[in-house]
Image (tube, rainbow, N blue to C red):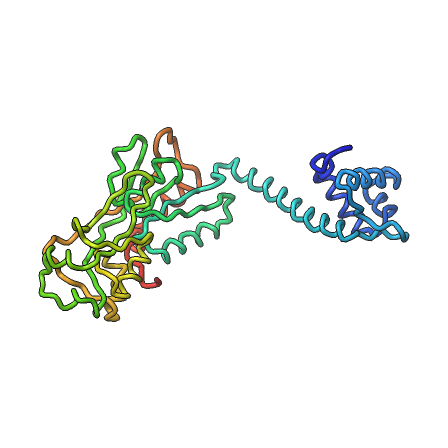
Length: 312
């Protein structure tokens, strides 16, 4: 006896749909150019392989059983998927990647990024997008480890990795902020390291799988660690700690009085931010990656990716 995989072919699923729509084996056989006995034999092969009855033959009409209805429903979906795969393969043959993975650092504006995703999908490309969250060295690591095709928001040097290419997005100023009800909100400025040490710092965990970096932390300081920049903002809004955050990201909260800037004794951090692509064995970008690289050539887009955080 044949197994289910042998009998559930696209032709067989199409045949079952024709029977259900025609309402009888005789009418379906005429449409398919078969004699009724041959059609009946093929249906019985499928029923035997599945060990179910697909059509009720007690009347002159061929009515699908409950099992038959389910197979017809799933069969229609499978046929649509096959058509979609064929379409995608034809498009991929024109130079589109099957999938493009972006590693996005937490300092990047999610609003602007999704505007770019929207514009990408508007072209109806065959390429599937995958977005990965990154923090600090982990943003670049996703690229250099082969888990991403493009890293946006890289704040560490990537041009020392074979094959990696990078462009500049711009500079981001990190400022020290606390909630207005936090004790450091009224501390004399500039706030010394000794005073900072008495209060909890909020840090974002580096998303790198190996090693990782820490920024702005003092040895021996109490630290509350979170996974995303957005979580860091929320924690500092609650007054649970203080720390450095990108000025564009906290600007709306500063204007609303929900966070206050504090001048500290240590120098401000102005971070040069890049985007990177390529890596070992990289030859040339496919059409999807090239589209993203073209968008990143725009000064307005680069600025918006760093500045447009008012939609958080």
